[in-house]
Length: 416
Ligand code: ADP
Ligand code: ASP
Ligand code: MG
Image (cartoon, rainbow, N blue to C red):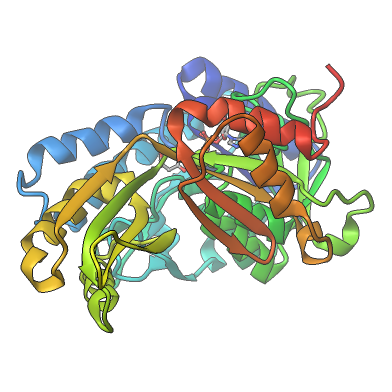
């Protein structure tokens, strides 16, 4: 019997009506004869509320991290509620269903509370339950760490729960139901002319996710790629009887029609720090970035340029916006050791990335990007590249203008 994993995100389970609607999608797959695992997120907005409560209860000093074990105990609770509610709704419709928390599977993680990675899934009991005809409703986003405590998988982590379960159970496919009907060339909420893609390669989806397209958590795409899990993104707002085709994430070879650039992704989750007049000598950059690495702060786009002061350089870089206060405090405390004259920070920046496997074999993608932005008078502050991606940092007031202009420049607009 084929096994199918279905995952429903926060807006898809936002209230009891939406949960009843999810049950209609589940019933359809049950009636088609598959063994079903359903992974649910917390109700829309619930995890944000729980995170905010933890912040209010947590330490006021930004240098002291949150107590991540208790953070996990709190924020994992949203999924506990929705898994129980969906199981109840399914039971009331005469279907056999039960809820499973991460520790009951067990879905084992590492010790990185707050952003844990899955270490192992002992899925025998779960596999037996679903093959015996019971629908398993799993609380996404959570597992159990080696300390015996609940661990969460980082924001958006229910996607990863779903793909990891699909891999562990050797499921035929993993369907990710969300509030858009597939993966688009850019966020369809930002640009009306965005186009749904029938297919996107694992590699491009991975890059899109990692630069900030939150439609799938990055780690879920890594797992899908590593374990060759066929993933589909589709909408829970479609009619459950006639759902749309969604977007299939697959190997590059399975895609016939290829564009040089397949997507444009803006990310607001960025902040820029500039350190002015740092002595231009070996070891200074190492001090800055070791300090940040030790505090678990990820640094992204780095630019070093000569300062007006002789023998000095300005160093600017981006970090996640949520880490800005902590980074600024750490760097201010280390001012004498690093030797800079002033520190500046800027939250009003956005990283805009263009992604496409076609870049590997086609020249000129960067020049189109830079010229398009220059023609609109948009100044580029920082740049970073990978084999299939170019990212630029710009003033956030130009986000929509930049996305729309680039979308058109790379021929991605759908016919209006
Ligand atoms: P869920 O709660 O179902 O996990 P998310 O909010 O995490 O849903 O992800 C879905 C959202 O991702 C969409 O509402 C959309 O605004 C956003 N998104 C960003 N980039 C894209 C893209 N390229 N294609 C589709 N959706 C995108
Ligand atoms: N509820 C969690 C979050 O909001 C996990 C998820 O929805 O995937 O981040
Ligand atoms: Mg999500």
